[in-house]
Image (cartoon, rainbow, N blue to C red; front, side, top):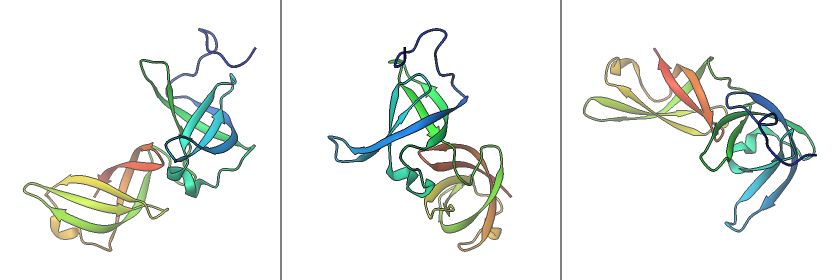
Length: 152
């Protein structure tokens, strides 16, 4: 029997699982979603826009990380990024810098031209300028966007 969770059939937070891309659908909120089915036959909905650069296709296998489970039993999943992996260091281009009292707000550009806001303390300010490349550690991914830690 599929389509249920039990003690011995349960997704584990932090683990990767294959999901089947069943179809895309527009829901009542007017947004397009990807419908993925897990190994136990349960369906999960992901807003499709954050994953537009992933080249996901209907009837294909999508490996996802289970990021968390909320109090209602809903699992939050994140498809593996085609470029970035958590724990690895990558180059990003500084798009803009906003100086505040004791910190900087950097806007970085990722491989899909997404803007990533990163707060950093105000040291090494002189070396940071728009247009330069900097290194950052990918801590995790949320809705297709790398969550970064700056590496000078």
